[in-house]
Length: 442
Image (cartoon, rainbow, N blue to C red; front, side, top):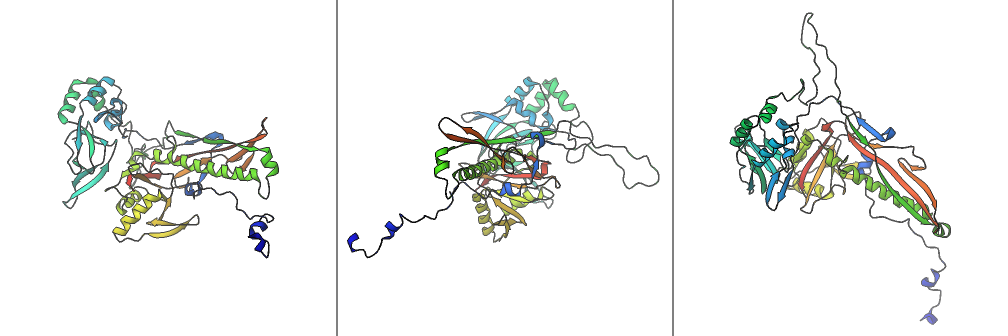
């Protein structure tokens, strides 16, 4: 065949031609919207302390359970998360109280049994009641670890199962018997819960007078601070990059092999940083939302009602964050209701807006095997008492803000090693700066 050619073939000509090539590409790189929109503050000394006004804690957390097969039991010490049992340390009384809870497995739509306390071990229930117009209304949604009622007051209010669920119920009779038998429990319940006057947020009250006339004695006051402020230590992500000297010497054109290796390594490091800012159990946003700022969907998928609920619980919101599948699920709900959300531009990308607040996609927000995810909403910046990122710049051998690349030397195999490091964390300055819509069906 080559004898019939009248000119040099393209295949042969390519052996003498210079190939045009791209820099190395990487599928792991994402928009990393959180790192772009989160304002970062310097954590000098590696620690950032969040000082707040003194708050009287009354213990309104979530309860944990253990299970053996289908049998579920509440952990006795976890009952201290109930407001009336906060700081109660009688282990014997807590154990007896835990043993008196009776398990009920409910089908979807079933009424929750009446009792003094109802603990939600699994599934979702809706608090029900009568609205101001005399109609039946849903007053709130509860999920795993939440509770209804307390040892003080009239007990749990009516509720029904939204999904198949498991609840533990303490009857009023058993609660009364235990109060009569346990002197320590009775004394604990009779003591005042708060240690001083407070506002509706639980913060120590600032006394003042208003609307007076004449010359009355004005109250004296001061703003008390939290005596145990939380401190956030910077977390670290590190790796050792290895580049053979032969590669760096002989195969360094037209692109610098070491620079390309570092570029892709730093990209992976930044991806890990954003993942940690969402998912780290110490400072990650999904784990540090206040319990009163965690909400449940009304029906499973994210609806316009759920998004409005998130927005209404804080004085301002700057960004939503959701997995792309959760955003698609919200879009389907809007389409079903013939609602057309607005679209805006953030960081050069066209994104959906809800009530003017951008919904930014992030695949770092997990989706469970059963198809459940979360939607995060936040206010950002120190001036707005919002969510901030923490970093440390000015590091030795810094190649970009907050990332240092230190040459560790060449070993006896002629491999050059580089230590790549970045430090980061996040802090929520006040509880209402961050909210999470949980158990979102995607």
